[in-house]
Image: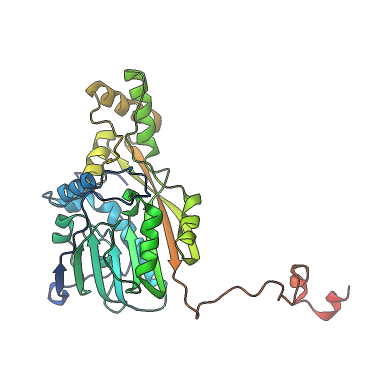
Length: 343
C-alpha cells in the first residue's frame, strides 16, 4: 500500500456494518476517570502514561484524524471478524482502549446488545465514529478498570495494551470483569513492529553520535502471551500473529503518521531530541536498506491476536488422563476394511 496525496487505502472487510444516519444508536457518556500517573506497585514503570494520554488526545483533535486511522481501522475490522466467528450474541461488551471506536463501527446490534467504549483519551471518546450499537463512553485507564466482577460477556481490545506498564495485571482485570463463559479478544503490536525504523535510527545514531538510545517502544514477545493469558486465568487459548506492511514515501512520512495515530514513543528512557543530521542520515539508511522498486519504503507492523475464555462448567474439558480406549498406533486402522486390519 502506498501513500498517495496524503490518503491511504485499505481493502475493507466485505459485509462490514454501514449505518445510515437515521439509524444511529443513542450514545451515552459517563465519566470514570482513573488515577492519573498511577501504576501498579509491582510493575516496571516503562511508559509515561500521562504523556500517552496527551499524545492520543492531540491526535484525536487534529483537523483530519481519519487520515491516520487506516491501520487501526484495518485491525479493528479483523477483531470484528473474530467476534463474528463466535456463533452467539453478546448482550454487554467492552472495548478497552477503544480510541475513536475502530471495532464498534464493524459490529452490529444483532451481535452486541450494548457497548462500553473505554479509553484514556477524552478527545478520542468525544470524536468517536458512529455505530448502530447503543454505546456508553467511559474515560478510564486500561491499568485501572472500575468495573465489577462478572460484568461483561465480551471484552475486546485493539492496539492499546502494548502501552500498559503491567500487562499481567491488566489481563487479570479483564478476566475478573468477564462473566463465566465470557471471551476476551485482543490485538497488540508484536516485537518485529517497525524493525526497519528501529534499525535505521540505531545505525545512524551510532555513526553520528557514537551510540544510540531506544526510539521505538519495547513490545511483548509472542512466546510470552500464552503464558500471561493462562496465568491470568483464561483457558481455551488462541494466539496467532500477522503482519501488515505499509509503504510510505519516506521515513519522515512514516513518523508523521505514527504521531497522527497517537503511537509516538512514550518510554521514560526515550531520548528527547535527535539531531537534524542524525535524522537525515537515518532517512538515507532507511531508503538504502529497505527501498522498494517504486522508490517507496516499507514499514512492517506485526500484530498479535489473542483469544481467551473465562471458565464455565459447560465448556468442553480434556478427558481424564488414562481414560483413552484407543492408542495412537491404532488410529489409522479405525476406518480400514477388516481384511486390511488382519494383514
